[in-house]
Length: 278
Image (cartoon, rainbow, N blue to C red):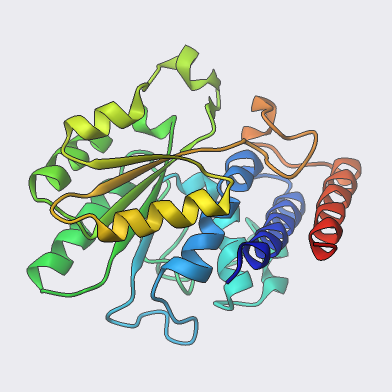
């Protein structure tokens, strides 16, 4: 896909995020919106996947380590054709398969149930190691939050991945600088993130995670890196695409009311129209 096509797709995914969280009257829009461009590139350009065969043996794997941003993953999976977009409005409803955190048993395209922060990277490392042991060509991608990497288990997993030279593993850190209690550097600073991963024998790449040129180049570089795993530190804007949510910590974990929903969708409609003029 061209960058313009990716931008249009990401904008549709952002609409899905806002719509599902509004319908649920709960959820995590901020970090879902910040990562929408990364989700888009992974599922529409980077990963070897097939919506018609979600359990394809040689598929690339994805683990949403920051599982609370499930609305972003669900909107992406729906846009990619894993399940009907109409189902997004059932998010967090009783009886819906789209619950507040990803469930690999019930959601097509979800490779790992997640939600307990810090654990997803360990699962991804295990998948990457299995690929190496079995001499398979699939790659494993995992998205972590920058607040999430305050968890100790992240660094246990990183130590082992670096030691085992898992060059089929790509860790993306959504560095939007905000977590539930405020800015990450005032809660418990993980900076410098790149130097920490380098200390665990990772190849690191710093990018603007909302710029498709930089995203594309980073994943190409990761694919060409041999003998060590890659960590992509993606600087993003929390709440990106919705005017009143951008860089606002309040929108880490709450749903827009009807009035706010209308404003958010108007923002995204205008952004979509602007992209169509290009």
